[in-house]
Length: 309
Image 1 (cartoon, one colour):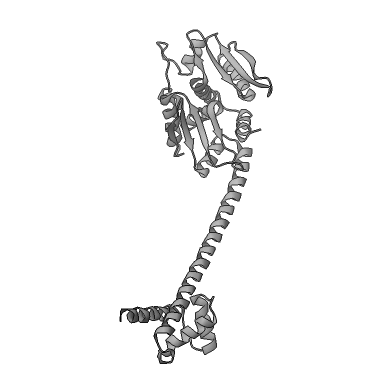
Image 2 (spheres, one colour):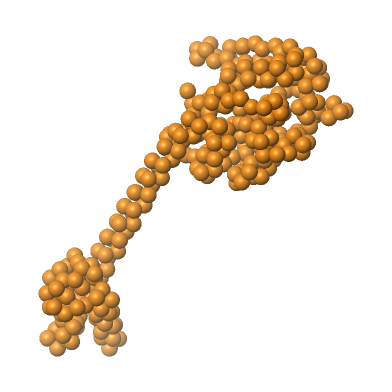
């Protein structure tokens, strides 16, 4: 069973007030239904969502609903659930704010349908049930999407999400529009909005593990970068000491320059901080990393001046 199916099954087990159920059903019918003059119908693969739509229409409008199962793949035994409503269809569509008084189709509801936060959540819940999906964080990247045929409806869903600070975007595809989120924290917040807490705990466990793993990788990369930096600097220092010995009479050099050359050649793999500690300990004369760096800069200056001659 997919992660999205688990989330939807959790939603189906929750109870909501009648007003929120009407808003939820409005989103489902608006996005998922084919509306004709004397009826409207839906095709779904999720049996649980099909049962919920069937029950909502019957309970909220006390009407007859025809539901049938159609096989679409004999080998995999896949079915489409067909929900057909002919009785009171115009009354239902008007109540759900999907057609206006003149019987014309509306692609987004009037403002009163999503006037408060709970109604916004209910509309988004209905949208997710009919056309939403979330990638399993254990097998793929973080991604939540709604696949919607109509541009106006897609922009309305995007508007609701952004009114709740989800930072969603709309992308045009060949035959539909995709409203999507990619921020892991925002997706987590959306699962919480759906009251799918078991799925939320699963998602957060995976997210924490992946974040920890990524942090460990970043630290390892930083550590390796520091090692590479030290090796590069150390090789450059040794090369400069070699050049200095070839250019100048070593015995005539300043004592501090000679000292740093001798210790660096003795402790070839040491960093400047390690070299400072070694010299301080063996000579009983305190020298800092900055002091070591200053001496190596002096060596570079000597080489540079000599090369200009």
